[in-house]
Length: 318
Ligand SMILES: NC(=O)c1ccc[n+]([C@@H]2O[C@H](COP(=O)([O-])OP(=O)(O)OC[C@H]3O[C@@H](n4cnc5c(N)ncnc54)[C@H](OP(=O)(O)O)[C@@H]3O)[C@@H](O)[C@H]2O)c1
Image 1 (tube, rainbow, N blue to C red):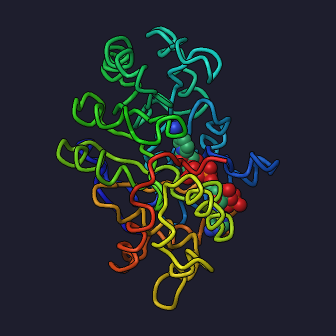
Image 2 (image 1 turned 90 degrees about the horizontal axis):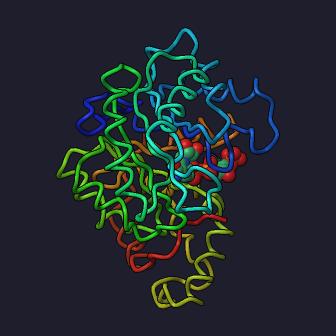
């Protein structure tokens, strides 16, 4: 397993991170057993993954806690407390510092650990960023002093912030140690608007949405290409109309569509850890292998840039 340094945290972590949320939630999203999901986490650890991302809202912290029991020292744990107090859609209703601390205590109890390595404020919108800095960050600093958390993070709400209105500010301000950013070969905007700033300021970076929704399969990804042509975000002259993405799995490029998608993110300049979400042991092992492979060939990256470089609206959420 290849490793990297997570920005100024100085933590050495695997380039492949296991995501315990998204659609799969370690298989809980598809009705798999708890034992199945615990096995996914342990399989990840056995294959060299040392970065695990979960959240209060995923319902998987206890599964992670069970899976890492006796192996706490092998793993960097990233978890999150939502910045919104009520419904996800009620964006003006944000938590206060006391609610944040109660949230962190809940994470610690469910994970069964004494300290969280990276505590993120979850799904922060541009309009909520100032509140995160002025009201919540001072309490996170207190929680660091108390030894409950080691480092601070923010995740963007990529579905509603596909052009990254929040993350560049956070990267430039440098108040938080780590940022979780949406990036995939369809929406490449983070390459120019976020990652150069995080790199310059030593902010650790985590990639979400590398393979999600339509990007898990070639046919659904090609349907997305056609949709983006219809909305005029893609110029149809940039691809072969019969099979717009077949070049990704041409001989000498990638063995599978998901392999190409993960390798794109893994080698994005300035991206530290690419998170893979899956409820399947086989997919997990395949994805870990993909994330340890070399970059896609330069001409393939150029072709992806030519097709998708102007897309700013898409998170690939379904
Ligand atoms: N704002 C936030 O904080 C936020 C938002 C989103 C995500 N995240 C984090 O990022 C992680 C990853 O999320 P994501 O959006 O990238 O993924 P995701 O929602 O888990 O979706 C990945 C999809 O790809 C499929 N897949 C994975 N590997 C595959 C393979 N080799 N072949 C075919 N299909 C495959 C999975 O299905 P199978 O289960 O069948 O493999 C799943 O449907 C989450 O778990 C979470 O930790 C954070």
